Amino acid sequence: MHREINIILWIVMSTFTFFTACTSESTDTSGTTEGSEETIVAERWSEEKANLWMESQPWLRGANFNPSTAINQLEFWQAESFDPETIDRELGWAKDIGLNCMRVYLHHVAWEEDKSGFKERIDQYLTMAPNHGISTIFVFFDDCWNPTYAAGKQPDPKPGIHNSGWVQDPGELLYTNDDLLPVLEAYVKDILGTFKADDRIILWDLYNEPGNSGYGIKSIPLVESVFQWARQVDPSQPITIGVWNNELKELNAIQLNQSDIITYHNYSNEVDHQGAIDTLKNYNRPMICTEYMARKYNSLFRNIMPILKAEKIGAINWGLVAGKSNTKYAWSEPIPDGSEPELWFHEIFRNNGEPYDPEEVDLIKSLTMDN
Image (cartoon, rainbow, N blue to C red; front, side, top):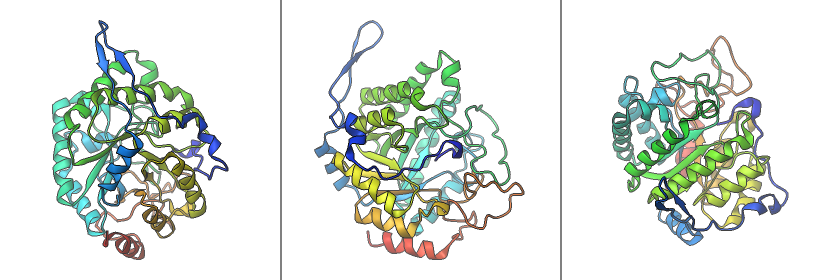
């Protein structure tokens, strides 16, 4: 989910040497807690374990899911705006076209304000999703879009502006509040610890697009920390942080070397997308594309989804139902009067359940209903 001013679409790498810094397996390490008490840190999954896990899964295909009534992660999860009726209805539309996996963003402020209620709402969501045959990828942190946020009522969408109200986590607060890191650690460990054996969750995506919004290598310490926290909890599900920008070499090295499953974002055409796949195959690990499909950039269901199916790569497009996030509008093309864009950027359905493009939906069904 790129912030347009900083977006560099993933392009095909000419040689595998781009990732030479991260070809080795991570090693078992141990840390210490306050008072020198030893803490066991689990190892990264072996290639064999990762590949056996993927073989046990169906072909994963789905969408990044934010209900149409939520402008951002906080409106999704806060008690006063949590909307199970819309969530259940929209997950049903996903099931109807053969989707079986949703990627869903969390936010530490929703947890900090109401820890038990937040976990109850996660459980409520996780009760609904399997009723539609849907497993879930949860995302903890995110470097995209608005750097500041607050609990409570969220802003209304700005007409015609893509993701006008989406918020980072932790955003600028990480660099202005010296007390935040222990809060983030407690948050991650509480959620992971609560749901570490929950088979309704398919994968933990620890950090969306680290280094975006101009942060660059400033995001490295949190990337390293969240991997460490997750290994200390040792969930039964795999963990990952997806690569998204081939210029962020130091970040990519950490992400690819620490992830159990290789995940990546690609909003380019079928030629460049295939090139990225061919490069990432060198890691001998299962792959999931956790963001694709931007019609303006010729990343389409008809030219990308068949490749991902043939390659046995999970296919998670951006956007399910058009709504308050405004992601049917392109990153760089606001329409201030809020009128319908001539070409939708993301999303599959209108908020009444009608498909934006019935031919697209027919194609998706043809690729999913037999698998």
